[in-house]
Image (cartoon, rainbow, N blue to C red):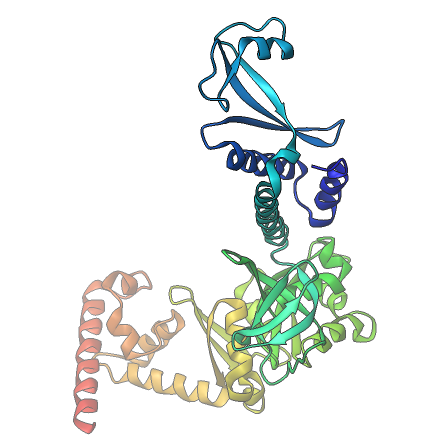
Length: 420
């Protein structure tokens, strides 16, 4: 091997990001393999890199004998003593080899092993680097477009931006275009690490705001959740750890500069920045803003809310094709049923009237039940006696009312079936 091997090792380690010790071990194994091709697999070969000389020193170990039968594995005592005067019969002694003796075939074999291991090490280094960068936003250049997606040059490696991770009808990239994307995953494959990018994932939105808003990067403002319908609309819920910092204002920036930078990157996607609140009802009201919410009825068991809004704001609250309420539901984690004030009052009236139709019901009892959250005959049919006795209704009366409500609901269902 040439004296410049040390320089080559140093350069490869630096430029390719390959661990220096791993590279040296690879070269040693390659030279050992080449030596065995020259002397046979039975040969006891050792190869070690010498830092001072910058060479790989190769030794063929032989057993010291009186008469040599196999020159590859044995050496006469007289010859061995020229190398080490204290050597004795039966000892093993290393004979330093000239690597030039391996010949062209052995040298080529060594070269192939080195190249192969270098490629493997380079793949491993790239995998380790990008695996640690999962969740980052990266800049790349469009290399080409194929059936799987857009191939993006990231410098050290190519990445894949799958078609379903491209903003629909907005991202129209062509070869040579620059793009930004989120590292969604890094897969270990035989051909090398596969870096998967995304421009549609909600985490891309979060990462962009983290880059644009110093208060988020510093942890003063925290993004609780983010939801998107890519290219159309998104909502993020934010909260401040500092009472003097307005989380919404921090995300918007002076004259909207910060949020507009994110909007431009997402091809005009409308972004609602929502103040998070520990009170689920307040959080839902914030998520539906600017719609004015008149009242919210929670059902914690079903994780659902009935939201009542003014008649003229119903369409705004629901949004185009239900988008606004759908995103608000995903953001808050509550199933939302938005109703207009008129519709809500009509439904409440129908519920109250159904209570009055229950045998043995009075207006006084119906008002008491409604006040305690039992608003319809259907709800009355589902409670137990204890629920009613706890609000001041006698056990006998409670039992009769529940039975009457159950009969009423059965008759209603029977009538409904007949009309189908």
